[in-house]
Image: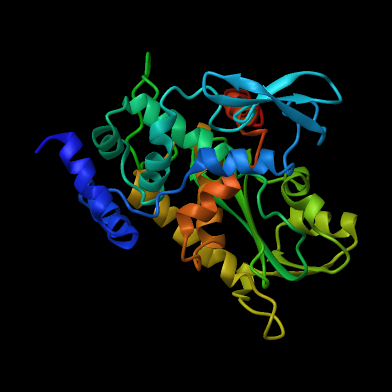
Length: 343
């Protein structure tokens, strides 16, 4: 049957039947009918005057023509123009017609090889898009910690997964450090969460944790309403004293698990276990360079686990951030800064 005949027959159907048929065709194609429309979400933000200039952050701007199909705007403050994608993770992407389907597959945790095959894109493109998207959620849902707040560190072995070794023997995935105890081969990740479901996961340093690392991770999110629970590490004690907050350290050497029936770090320890299981089972380990990106992803998974429209909500959140592209370009610098903390 010719395309014109199919189209003519399609238009004779009722609206409900057409929508149902479209959904079935999308499912046959392997993609959900609830695929988000990222470009539409972004344009709506700007057209409804809820956005800001990607150059200076000013909220007063006007439409300023089109640029290769993209809506342009002009800032009334700095007089510079920008498109609807400027600064977002969609900036500079050449196959924007595939980004909605990509996001759907990414959140289904499909492998890069599977995404490459289903969308007919390069594997490197699939990898880059993943980290551009993850750069857009780093600062989402980061309110202050109130009430009983648990914090503890866990360690990942330093990994250069994906990097070709020019000299030296590569370490087998899942191996162990060649040095004893906590050392520069270990990357410390601070996990903090309160009983009201606020959570933070931060790649802090290489090697042993210091007070300054804790302050950088959560110092801006605590207040006099925060009651800190941690192990008895001296860095947490110093952090609590300096910030004048109530602190309940738990001494593991005395097998102390709970104090007064409410003070413990069992929620955080459970998060450690689930985080490592997710990283190892889904991705077979990740490069230290991109570890913070995956922590961002894990945090959003936890925050949106009750959502009935996960992909839609994730998409709407991700397109709001005009600092995502810049943050993505800084990944190498941030990794180098982390390595500089090695003892």
